[in-house]
Length: 266
Image (cartoon, rainbow, N blue to C red; front, side, top):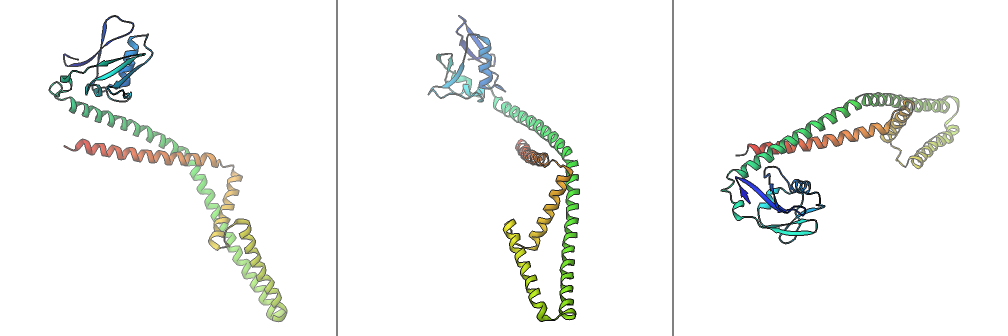
């Protein structure tokens, strides 16, 4: 019913002999809010539910204005009764600015909620970044150290191959002859093949220079992490948390921008 501009729901509660009027707050109330108000009014009530006339249950998250669209049913405990909505209540002449008011309030509440969520996410992200900062510096230091040691190892390998070539050349042309050194060079070459094949069997990776370089770097980095007792689990968890927060913050800002564009659209 409609009285003095207010939409009212008149119910007869189980423990009361007279009807009780509930004011429907059209601007912000949901079905769940209305159910809680009814339960507070009568201690004997255990459950309250709203249904359409075809017995489809109305969700608690639905706005209370949904009840004004047509007749509906209400179940108090085990008793179900039908509520007839006055046809004139749904007419816009009684609420000339209701639609615009509700839309404005919903947009304002949505913008306010998005703003609060954005501040909360930004605060959490800032806290995670502060915790990550010293860990990132430590990781960069260990990576730089591992890269330097890898370069040293690679240059050492080049020096070793050069020294090997020099020794074989000395033995071939000065100390002995090619006939003597040919089997030696064969076995030296064959040992290189065996080492390459052994590397593949152990690592299950092809013996290629970029792959070997990355593996040497990873080995040195693992040693640095172990020796410094770096908490890898905590670091990865913080990185993952930061990524999730950044994605949520990005989606929230996109939604905020869309709402702003919608609000500015005449």
